[in-house]
Length: 585
Image (cartoon, rainbow, N blue to C red; front, side):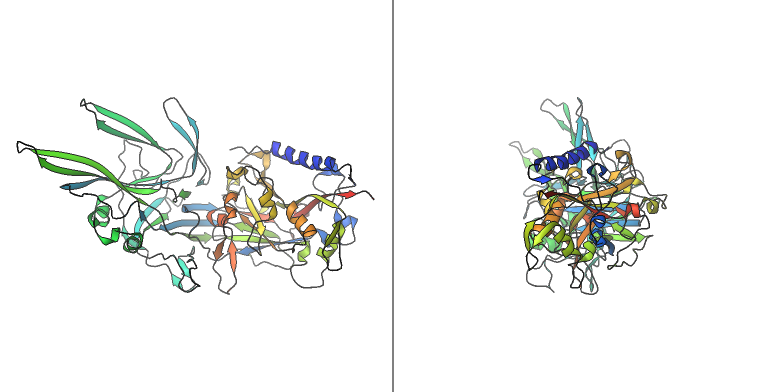
């Protein structure tokens, strides 16, 4: 989809200009301070390092942080499945999920004489929108949860097993009521493996060649597309005529499963204590393990909405009751019923990384040439503003000198008066296309549209995230002012990435006016910036360090490489820009 960014850029420029006009009665627009002369030349820009004696005002130190296994359970009900290839290599995602009953102590056969299962259908929808409905009720869907983007998608091989490992809710080795974390490398901790997983394998019923209501193709693989399913039912009317109705089912995975497993596991347990409550059932039936494999060394990567009630396993059955009429003749009564099982409780994703790129050892003191960002069990970046001053004890006065350039402080270094008013502050990162282009098999469409910048120390959002009221219903356009989407060549989704621009005005003003600490910032790939309001996921470490990563980054398979502060191409070096006005004397 073409990204319409021109109007937004004009709006941002207009907003800056308006802010200058609004202050005209009290402030003179002497000049704008931008720590890079590559932008906004119409504001008579000078570098701060040229205005003041301390050139380190402009220093932004950036370096990569490779991640170990990441926590993947309780990721807001989303599950990932399939294969994804980019410059980093291949990641294969599988998942295990507990299963809950739609009701406990269910009655299936009851007093009926017979019960026969008609079908068992597993459904897991993609995330989708409806773009058109024609006069024949044919629906056109927009699916944005299949990677890589495209008009067609590669199939995957899917195995579904009964899970043999009990997923507990609480960590017995932690404090009371601490939730159990499960990690992407099939572990619950550095000393506990999630094993065994693979129990009985479920059997798929093959899709008849003349219908299109199942996901299994003629080769037994899962076909993936952005089309929905048309489900047709036929009933006999009172007049003896057959009535046919069609229901549209949205895009997703839809499979028919062999009856025998569910007859034994669920139907035959009617009246048994194992179906009487949640605890009994979760111990009795520990869930399902969905394992993905490549087809012809290829595949697709899917985000599944497993938390929705539309994601379920439904058992359709018919009961038969035989009675006798007044003449002693048998009267056969058939009733159709259904029973649903949902993917509730714990869900854990597993990532099998086969990377071609190793994240280099980083230099936290002077920064790196490149920044490596990769979702999942990949990498994030860390950012130190103002040469990293005020992050640790030391003699470096860069932060204090910078602060004194804008505000007057008291003897304790606390804010006293404004000397210069900050109108806007942006942090800008350029994509290292020279590096990306070494990997000819990669596509610009694999570059992540959104990144997320945050307070790394406190694992929290910046103030700018809260004050950005831009559209929040569509993830691509959410927090558009603060977390600027990837600017691409030609503003096309297929264009190579140029740069990311993050507005951090409120964060800078917090440093100046609210005496906030110059904390280290984090930068990560984001699948959906709306999800960043949630608690971050743990990262498993071997040295006892407490490390977390944004939940949306865990869910994304995408990655990119940016220019760091020590890049050889100075025109693409990461920079901070600050627009300010100065009061009349």
